Length: 297
Ligand code: CAA
Ligand code: NAD
Image (cartoon, rainbow, N blue to C red; front, side, top):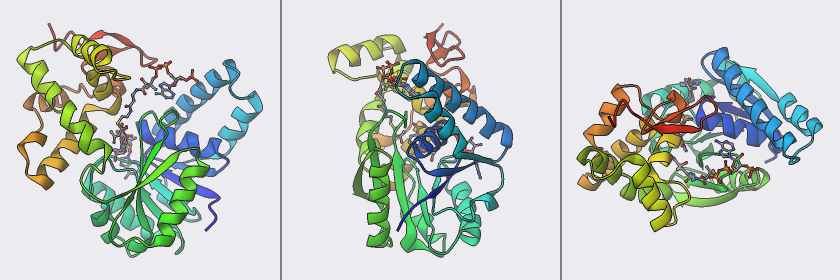
């Protein structure tokens, strides 16, 4: 199966990176969100990132323009009718995703593949909400998509081998390292990552250490590339809690129980880098200014 045109639904943290990587790899991209202003903002961010790459001499100005020229902005699901594959990266919510897939299933061409970037939700359940479960798969990218090499290719029971093969091949064409994994809550990386990082909000609430101290400990003491608080802010506290809730609901294991402190943070609007405040505070370019003084007084 040859892919030429890719639909990317959701222009948030992940959709932005996925759309950029697809366009940079030579694919036509239909980049969709519920409102055009959200897509505009994401494309502005992609433009900024590509301009930085031009300044660094990593790409030419022509390559930047060609990449941007391959991205078609969209606020209507119907714009994806002629896409060969659609990669969904909308909110981590089962009902929202199912409702979107039912619309996509109705308008997409029969041979199109539907892929989800879900972090933890059941890919089998999403596949069952469509009339094409054999052509439904997980493509779990990692944040920041432009930099992280892995794609977990999540295979539900119903998926056809031809779909797995086509998506593995697509992953390679995107310059990534696709690894097939069975559909299971949290797949591989998030199931393991959550085990360690779930302790962090409990420790912060107990006052064991401040976010910067915890991050320093893990970077210098465990050689983590990024501390768990900074990583939590990069991922988004809303996404992190959704992953914990799925793992907790599926395995019924207290070790996955989300900290009440995480819920307090979300209710206060402190979702991390994307809202400018999480465990840390950020400037407009996403650089850390300091720890969140509203929380750690
Ligand atoms: N978007 C695009 N590019 C970015 C970026 C972003 N948000 N952040 C950093 N980069 C690029 C920089 O431009 C830079 O590129 P060059 O080498 O071309 O200059 C490169 O990444 C390195 O960046 P920096 O020098 O600024 O900083 P760094 O060396 O600390 O690297 C990092 C930043 C790549 C994010 C690194 O800290 C890292 O790997 N952190 C861990 C990330 C991680 O674990 N991600 C997985 C999260 S879990 C997940 O995604 C799954 C889920 O379902 C939640
Ligand atoms: P986000 O909140 O940054 O962005 C979600 C976007 O989806 C928003 O722009 C929202 O307007 C849009 N959206 C919501 N409903 C929509 C609909 N019906 N149609 C079109 N657009 C819609 O979220 P995110 O962090 O980019 O996460 C997106 C998905 O990727 C989630 O499933 C998440 O679990 C997964 N994921 C996230 C990360 C991460 O580090 N943040 C990593 C891997 C996977």
